[in-house]
Length: 622
Image (tube, rainbow, N blue to C red; front, side, top):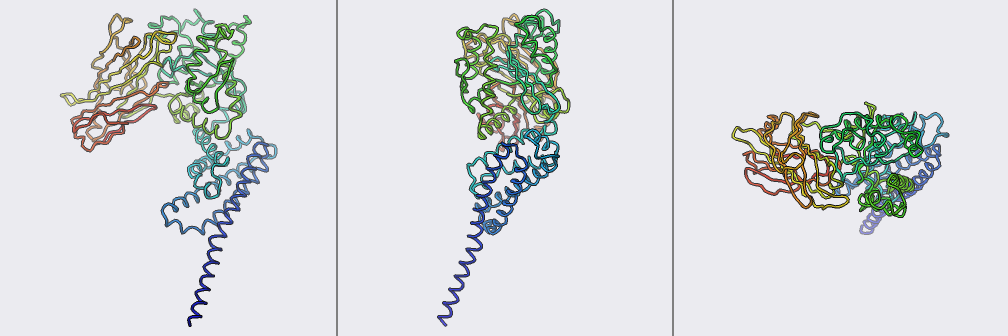
């Protein structure tokens, strides 16, 4: 009997070993083999793309799809791990990634096979095929985004971690994400059916203006069939000086008064707060100025020739973008000057303002170095790795969000899509409380780089239960008198909710207005605008105070035990500090508020601090 029992136990053990080998070890071996094959095919796909061999690419996508399907079948043997919390989550993400890859492959095969002659296609025509299949394009975009989120779990399973394959997945997901809002118009934007020309405005935010900064340099970007055809960069004064006394156009009153000018030039065209309005003003002035360009003087012929042709849109860029880009692609040496990401704006200003004579360059040609720098950067971008392209894509997304890049299209359909994506520098519509501070440096050099700003926003109820707002804006000038810093001369505009009732303006005075504070009040963009001119001496700190009553719809929120404040950031401003104080005579013991820190809190009032790096919604509930 004992002998039979031992035989039975031995048989059971052998069966368990066989089951384990069959159910566990064989699937593991299969997954490893299939993952290695998939990796090899993924490497081949990179070469197919480089050679424009899309017939082979289509076949390789089928091969990837087949192997991924087999990996999924083998992974089903491990479904039991779902009951183990950490492993269960990894299993689910891996299976989701496999489903994403299958859908991406199916859509890609459909797009390739819808093409007339895949054997004669190049990267550009493949892009057209993708964009001509919007339903499949949207599928690919969605599932690449999902795959990117789970790719590390998937790559750990099939041993692709830290490979070029993973980097490519992430890069494609980012590119698809940033282009999705305008996917149906990309062919038009990139000039597939004819050249597209864009006016570039380089806004120096060390000298703030409404949409980002003073326009000292402009450019013309020409694209055709998805490629940069030409980029021309020039000193804005080369346009302006040829139109002195010839424009006869109306000038915004603050520019006329504080810059002492009777004509409105390109360098000052970005005065209006909403970028679309400024872009249209810039295009109007550009059209006026290029009519005055001299095509007879050989010194001006290059300027004349490069400013011929229709303009399809406007792109505004702040120098922070270039500085951050150099941190990714590396330092650039131009005419013996090394430009680094860390000090880019300062180095560039010195190169064009101070040291151009040492390079043997005239004042007229001193900004040619910007043209050479742009060319060098574009050449280095062509040689960038997948990782660097991914970082650059992240940078572009970040700069679009915080308005260091702002876009405008003359095509209403494209402009509407850009606006919906939040890339057009609009003044935001809001049903809540709202505030936007807009500074415009009027003839105080590059002093904004030395200015610290703090906005103290105080809310309280008066004896009539009306909601009162007090905005105290403190400017601290840390600079001195030098080639790039002087007395700060600033036209301040404060946008507040429509229906607000002005109470008082106080604070410091300035000699420009004979020691009187002048208030300019108007309605724009569905808001009330309060404007005033101020001056701040170097090493001084002064405060300007606006007081007003908020409209009833803001007060009514408080009756529902909530309050929301939309703070819109001006393009070009860095790290603006807001201190928000609320005293509503409400019980704040259950208060929730999304500020960075609480400076003071008691039963009936709260003070919080928030550093604004992009548009922000402050929310309070109690």
